[in-house]
Structure formats: C-alpha cells, structure tokens
Image (tube, rainbow, N blue to C red):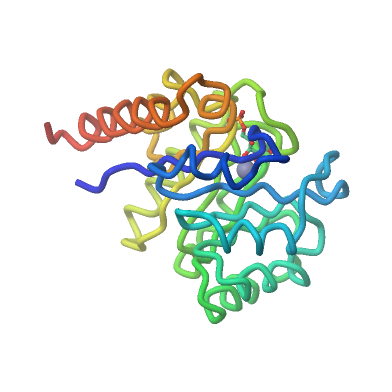
Length: 227
Ligand code: DX5
Ligand code: ZN
C-alpha cells in the first residue's frame, strides 16, 4: 500500500528564522510553500527570490502552492527554480492544459488546485496532464481556518474518477488538517496532507508530523482493507 505524505506549510512558521524552521520539519515528505500575491487571495507572503533561497537550504523537496493571479505567466518560473512540485489554481489559469505541460517540461510535477466551491467535473478530462490535484479544504488565503466538510464529496468524486481512469494523480488536501480531520480526508481519498498550524503550532513539530502520518496511514490501510 502507498503511504500518505505529510507536507507542513511554512505559512505558520517563523518567517524570520526560516532555515531553522525548515530543519524542524526535516522528517516530513515535502515543505509546502504558500505563495500569495494579494490579488488572487487577500494576503501577501513571499515570491520567487525567497522560494529560490528556501529551495537552496531545505533538507526536503519543495511543494509550491501558487495562490497568484495570471498563473500562466508566473508559474513556469517556479518550475525553472528546480522545485519538485508546482501547483497553480485552476481559477487563475486561462490555459491549464498548456500550463501543466509546461511545468512538466521544465522538470516539476504539475499540480492544479481547486477552491472549495470550484467543481472538479470540468477538469476530469485533463487529469492525465496532472501529477497532483489539490482540493482546498478551506478558502485559500490564511492558515488556522476550520476544515470545510462540504469538500468531502468532491474528494470522493475526484478519487472515483482517478481510480476509474487509471491515471496516477495524487489528491492533496490543504486547510484545517488536524489529527481528527485527516481521518475524514483520507477516508474520502486524499493521500497528501498539508498542515500548517497543526505542525508549527505544536510544541514538537516532528512529533506532530509522526502523529499525522500514523493517523493518515491508519485510515488509508482501513480504506483499502489492508492491515
Ligand atoms: C491556506 C494555505 C494553507 C495553510 C494551511 O491558503 O494554502 O497551506 O497554510 O494552514 P492550516 O493547516 O493552519 O489550515
Ligand atoms: Zn497551501
């Protein structure tokens, strides 16, 4: 059985001590980097030059989540920076198929994100162009929000479509993931979990990562009937 991935979000980290904050999550699968432009979402974080420095010092791969307008123009530059994975928002792309292909050509895994109210159905035919589908479980923009259960049916529908077509697309969830909500998201079909406050808000981030991974894997095992 494939085990789950825990990708802590540095949105909840201390931005003045990023290198040390990255070391605290070195047992995670990847570091989730939230890029916000104050247009696509009402918040501003960091841009490509800072992401390049994070990439240079991080002990684990980077998983960039671009909450930026005009993704077609700006996302390829993040792939050029050597990031393992680059995720753009479907709502911010005019030509998502072209963009996903461009990301892959530049050596990154291609991810596409959907806001909570964006349906997955219009995008099912382009699943083979993607390595990851990010189903937002809060409205993007801020850490520390409550998990939206209304996204669970969409995760289930996406999982059924992926299983039915045999494409190898991972479902990532982002927003409000805790040791409790991870169970519902995993049961619905997610295998990659972003957690900001649940990791950096804990006294021991490494222990929080271990617990989230155990809970996620426990649910994945029971969902696949393997013990
Ligand atoms: C929200 C970001 C998330 C956020 C998650 O727009 O995309 O990655 O940091 O934070 P928590 O886990 O606190 O909801
Ligand atoms: Zn994110």
